[in-house]
Image 1 (tube, one colour):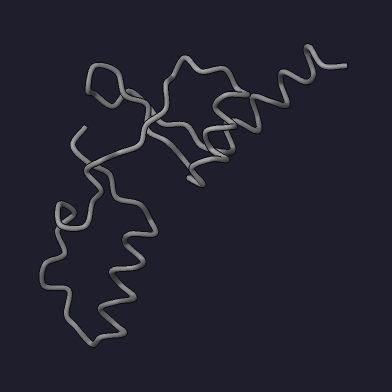
Image 2: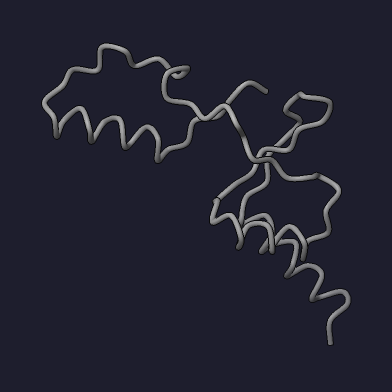
Length: 91
């Protein structure tokens, strides 16, 4: 994985170009992507993953293994998993 670009990054670029009346000349992803990507361990339990979401304020995380993207997880995925755990284990 060499970088990531979010919806927010794209919206910021669109907004800035409109606000400053600048054309989108250099609209490559490479120019706007984040290269120091925060990832999440795919082996974390649901509660530790939820904590990482809360601390980072991200909506989703890529999951990387040996430097390669193998998936992503979203806040919605955490909510679904927590509800399934509640049905099975919580009282």
